[in-house]
Length: 338
Image (cartoon, rainbow, N blue to C red; front, side):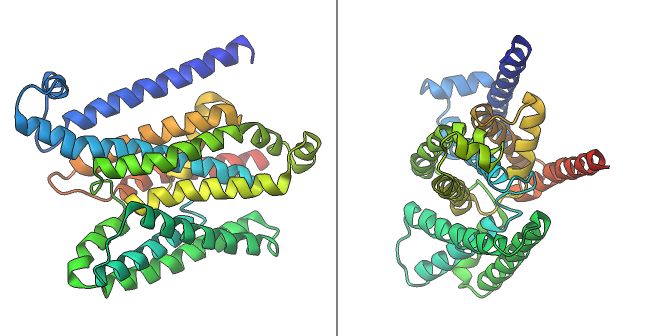
C-alpha cells in the first residue's frame, strides 16, 4: 500500500478502536442506575459499593461483551457471504440463514423445555448451525437453477419469511412457562447473556474468526474471479465449502444466543468499505469485526435506554439504522449503472 492508503487504514482502525472504547464505557455507565466513571474504576478494583459492582459485573458487562462479540461475528459473517455470492446485499438475515437457524433453535428449546431436558450452550449452537446449513443448502440448490442473483436473494427472503412464520406459530402454542423466554429471544436481545455464555460463544467465534482471517488471501483472489483464483492455486470447491461453513457458524452462534439480528451483516461491511476505501479481506475481516462490535454496542445502548425501564429488541434498532444504509447503497449502485 502507498502512504496515503496506509494512513487511511491506520485512521480507520484508530477511529473504530476509539469508538469501541467509548461505547464500552457508555454501556458500563448508562442505565437505570447511573454509574460515574470513578465508581466503575472502584468496581474494577473490588472497592466501593457492592450494589454497583453487582450491576456492573452481573448485568452490564455480560451484555456489552456479548453485543461486541456477537455483533462483530455477524458483520464478518455478512462480509463472507457477500464475498461468496459477489453481491453487497447478501447477508445472514436477508438470505434467511438467521431465520432458519432461529427455527431449529426454537424447535430444540421447545422440545427440551417441554421434556425438562437440560440445554447446554453447545446444543443451541449446534441446532442453530444445523438450521443455517439447511438454509444455505437450499440456497445453493436454487443457485444451480437461478442464474440471476436478484432472484436468489428473493428466494432467500422467502425462506426467511416461511421460517419466521413457523417459529411464530410454535412460540404461540408453546407452554405458558416457556413463551416469555422464547418470545424475547425470537425478537433479538442480548439481555439473557451471562459471563459463562460469553465465554462459550468466544470459544466458538474466535477460532472461526481466525480461520476467516487465514482465508483472506484466497478471498482476495476469489474477488477477482474464479479463473484468476484458480490460476493463483486456490482450490475453488474446498474454498467455497470453508467459506460457507465459517459464515454459517458465525451466524449460528449469534442466533443461538441473541436471536435473529437484522441488517448488521449487510450495513456494517458496506460502511467499513466506505471508511477504508477498500474491499481487501486482510483489512475487511478485522475491520468488520470492530465495526460490527461498535454498531451493536451503540444499538444495544439505545435499545435498553430509549424507553427505559423497558427494553426494545435489538433487531428493531439495527433495522432503523441499517435499512437507510442499505437503501443508500442500492441507490448508489443503480445510479452507477445508468
